[in-house]
Length: 141
Length: 88
Image (cartoon, rainbow over all chains, first blue to last red; front, side, top):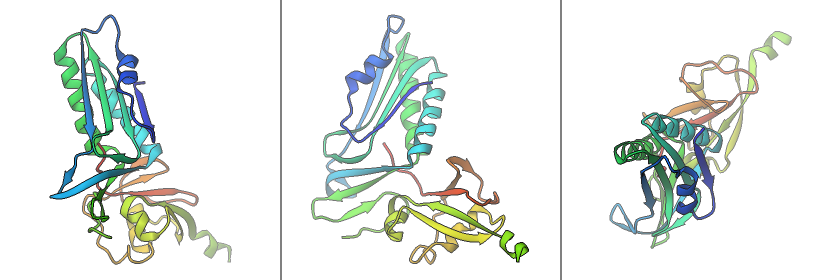
């Protein structure tokens, strides 16, 4: 079973790399998603993440397993709670014998995680307003 | 009457993100007719949710597993409404 972490603490990419690195791997691809200062032309100070933790963990494990089927070892970590600008909300590490499988597995894992896993973000703007990115809400104070 | 009692089930609805904020709680207890499909839950939620149109991409989980909206519920079930996701 691939390593999947949901945590309210800052992510450790080094620990994630160490969890999948090994002498049989000649390439390690890393994707780190971070909080950007701008969203929808508004200044953002932080993103706040919320998960349906039981299903999010199961779905992240399924995504990582699909990525591993491309010939890599994969580890995934997603941060929950408040993630200030510049800090990492998600990290994916894929280690493989050669770089094509590492890149492919890393790409599949982040794309599928963003598409499927029940985690939501709320943007916290510099003017104090917040908005959920969940297809439902309008900006509120 | 026993027959009448058996026609009702108690389920828990888990709410996340803006649904949780609209309800002011992360779970709502509902008493519904037996075998109500999970897809019918929205219309039984407190205002202002039930008068808000559900997003077309709404998905459902039953007892922590993905489920089709036509699936009937049983007593004690835990239903989650999964709005379009935005992790990453």
